[in-house]
Length: 84
Image (cartoon, rainbow, N blue to C red):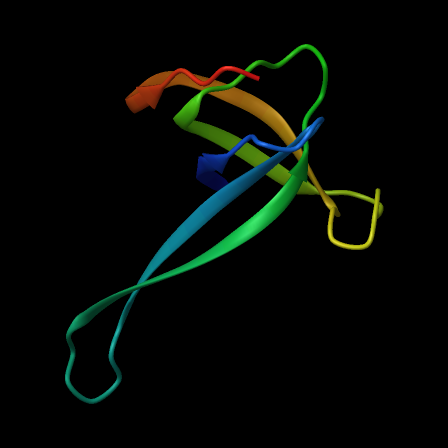
């Protein structure tokens, strides 16, 4: 799945927002739904807020972390540097 990084405030953890687009069954309007995933952040990646990443499921690392960031894409629409 691909998503956008929303938060990197925790150590070795990033929150990734994944959006999906669907059509309403009766009204045929386009609806956007999103979900935030808490992902484990490997040490070789140093992503910025707003940067697009690819995540995949993995064995649970903690109570809420069961996703891993696999790839960081260079295209950052609104990258914001944060001091950690």
